[in-house]
Image: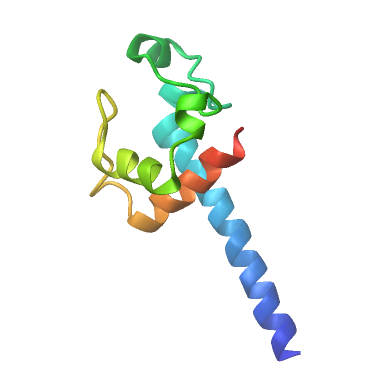
Length: 99
C-alpha cells in the first residue's frame, strides 16, 4: 500500500509539473513562439523567432536552451528572477515535446 501511494504521488507530481510547464509556456512564451512552437505569430515574425523544430534549435542542447531562457539571447528577454531554474527546466522539456 505504501508503494502504491508513493507511485501515485510521483505520477501526480509529474502530471502537475507537465501542466505547469504548459501553463508557463502559454503565459511566458506563446506570444512570440506560438502554441505549436512554430514562431508563427506577429511578434515571432517581427523578432525572427526560429521554430523549435528547426535544425538550428533542434541541435541545441537542453543546457543551451536553459541558458538562453534564463539569461536571454538576442531579442529574447532573460527570465532569471522571473522563473525558477526548475520552471525553466520544465519549459525546456515542454519545448522539446512540441516537435
